[in-house]
Image 1 (cartoon, rainbow, N blue to C red):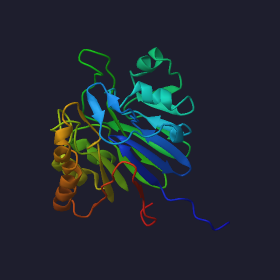
Image 2: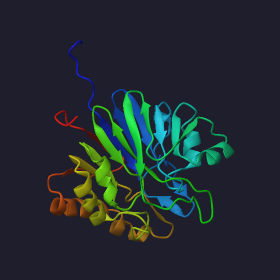
Image 3: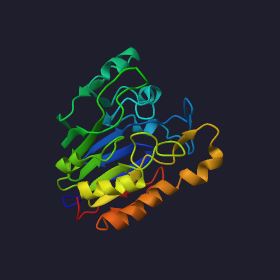
Image 4: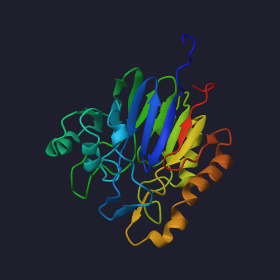
Length: 260
């Protein structure tokens, strides 16, 4: 029908830092990691089936860590998506036979369909392993009919305010993958403090409750569920104007029409 409205922009949380973003006819994945086990980390929820995501337009990789750049998952997603990786990561993909990629430098802007994407700073460790390959750590700001910030892994830093212009949604990491937040990750309060710099209309906590070290399943109810709830509590205190939506893996959020 001629007056049919286009679908609202939507994000689906797939666990950890993996999300499907659908906006303006574009579909992309962030940091897809779909395996049940990554070295010493075991997934606590069912792994997504890669098949429904093999036709996405693009994949955004924020940094080199194994829980964000997973070679078996990228191979399972096939040859269709173009993978955007931080500058310096191309050699790693080449060694594993992955050819359809593009390196992105800090500050660079590129388009996926009609959506403009800017690579912004992230403050995290650069190496894939100690003394191993290094590449930039990036966040991404997506701007189409909605504006969405995905930081990968980062600490809070003052320059977040530099790319906070008219953000609809911030996808903020609120934990690591163990019984504490780990080095150079934001915890619930840190992520809430980031809201005061970013000023988004909506926020979704990510990077929580998906992977934990082997032998720690007995602690599951402790650190699996409290980080996003703590984030919501701190957000209410620090930035009460931001609407927080806690999504479980598989849940989606449509950005309301009055925002997008």
